[in-house]
Length: 474
Image 1 (spheres, one colour):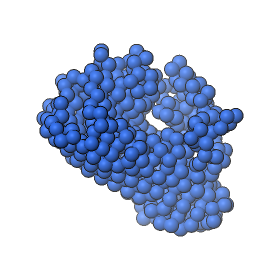
Image 2 (cartoon, rainbow, N blue to C red):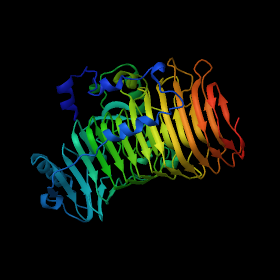
Image 3 (cartoon, rainbow, N blue to C red):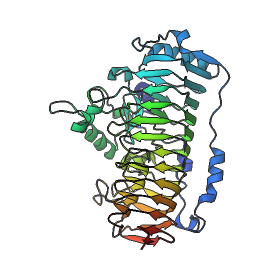
């Protein structure tokens, strides 16, 4: 959605009431939680039954027939847009990027359109920021604003997909996009611009309740766009593509329902290069994906601080299975932009191994976020090594206790997880007035743990059947 359409539809003072708000407000109270012995896993079949990828009519729209030229130098943006428009007018089908290299700017998908990047095809995304203007309604680090378009974007659509065995190349590097972070290891040097002032201005506007239509950023603000972002969409499929060199987060479904991400390979080591970040989404399956990333492999979000509480849409029913996590920060992370809450997360049958992967399961919350995180489960995961802890729940992340909102983490279970090397087994830090509650680490085996466990302000820790360095965990 571009700014003129957003303002005309909702008004500059609109509060963006979510079409998914009804389900987002159904956080079960403590009395409604499943008993610990049930483990919550009996919910999984019902969740998986609801997650069904969209299907598309058997019609193809090859972008070369609409003027796209192979070679990687000619701008194919308009040709791709014409192919998408023709596909949408025909009530849907497949827009095909054939074998070859095609240069493009922002791609905006329509309902009932599958963007199919064939084996041997590469979409090269422009390194010119102007190729992602005009601004659209988006989120930057889970805060709503008008900013550069994500490279592939859809707003308010149903039945959209990105499929095929080809490559999406964001062409980001230390000279393009990454240095906007303002860190030397991302290519920034003194005298170069960065995003810090703009980021602080956006956060201040959000805390002050400024209408989203007035939060206009873009050229000169250096807020990097995400790679793929379906926004307020239903029935989304991202399958089998390879993603490299992203400016920022790679796959960021936001305020979406029924999302499948499967068979995707991500190799991108820039700053904030998260792999898959479901943000205020319901019913999401992440299956058979490979992550080699510069930040969290999977990071579940639900809005940041005041803006997350304003939109008030949780992430719920998130399933992660059969994935391989290499480099990254957290293998499966919840937070830190999690003010809308998160529950019913199931991660299983995954493999993780890297000396720079922080944790297998990581929850990041604090007194500025104040999110309610509960019913989060991991089982049957093998870990070679991580650089910090197998399970990390830390309320002192970033702002820590410097805020008025109570962070909550409760009913967290890790079962049959094995690890061969880590500094800590568990790293659990609650607040004195807000302990972490009901953590179960059952039948796990953690070997070569250098420093044992950290457990501060934890109420109800169960370590039944778990060993650390061959000894019963205590």
